[in-house]
Amino acid sequence: MIRELQPDTETGMVTQLIDVFIEEARKRITELQSAIDSGDTNSAEKLAHSLKGSSLSIGATLMASVCLRLEEDVRLHLSEQCQRAIEDLKAEFDRVVNALTVYKNGGVKNENTNR
Image (tube, rainbow, N blue to C red; front, side):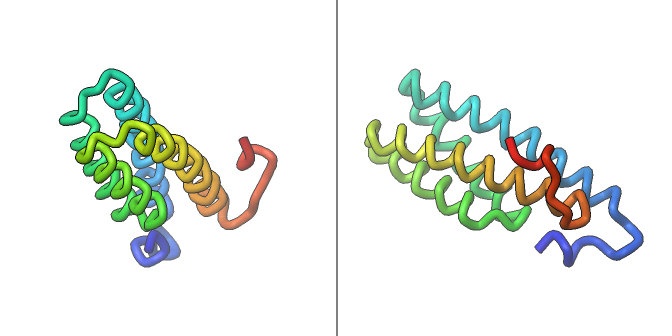
């Protein structure tokens, strides 16, 4: 999806989009973990929903699916499943960050891409 947004001559805007997504998603995941830990289901559900939309807009469909599962688990007050889902979300987010970093580097993977 991102390649469709980026003409060959315009890398800056897409790179900024990627950077903003990563920064905002990282923040939302931290807030989501805190909301789940404190039992704030309203905030957790809103954060999961928002992160789902952001993930879809950048083309991270698997991450969006994990957010949907988390949103549903929160709505149903399934605390064990929420904890598993948040861990799955963190792992998928790391995978997405790695893939986006490779993309930003022109498809070339380097040592900095792996955490």
